[in-house]
Image 1 (tube, chains in turn red, brown):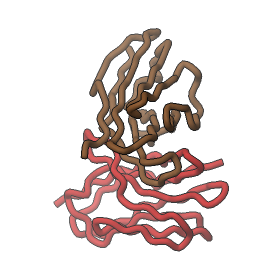
Image 2 (tube, chains in turn yellow, green; image 1 turned 180 degrees about the vertical axis):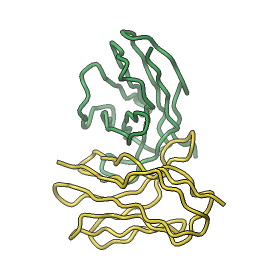
Image 3 (cartoon, chains in turn cyan, orange; image 1 turned 90 degrees about the vertical axis):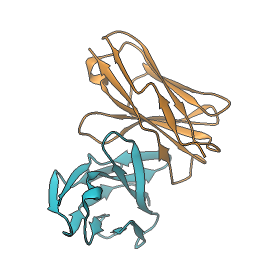
Length: 110
Length: 113
């Protein structure tokens, strides 16, 4: 079946630190992979996506590469800002259904 | 362009009652998916509606049901509420069922006492 395993949080970083949030997946076929972000009190927003192996999704300084050999889609950012504080969800799309990880809470302190 | 809207924002029900949640899809979108997000968890897929027909269902009992209207807005109905139904209910719309990008509403926070 399809599932996503995401790095446990919470994660606390100082401003300008490097961020990695690990995500691995199990899937039948060739799913599309996503990172969503949820700011306090809001719904989920698509951060980036990759639809096939070796694709790199990027947005707002965040990047993630679809690694089929390691079934991973780790999220990275070179220099985080206080405004990046949020909960990050890794997800995959299998058929018409999205499967989400449990989320990783990130707090960035000045 | 109007985004996805949901109503109500919050509501409180007691065990055994029934509830209806509403979602207006983004303009031009014909597909609506519903998710349950328990506290501290990721969203769990409930079901999807595409052009007024159910188009896939997650592992939720039949007391979770839905509708989609000709204008592609949607309702989620939950009968015989249980304490574990307390969660944030999210609606997401997309241009077509197979389209990769879906846009989420802010959610409805349901508390069952």
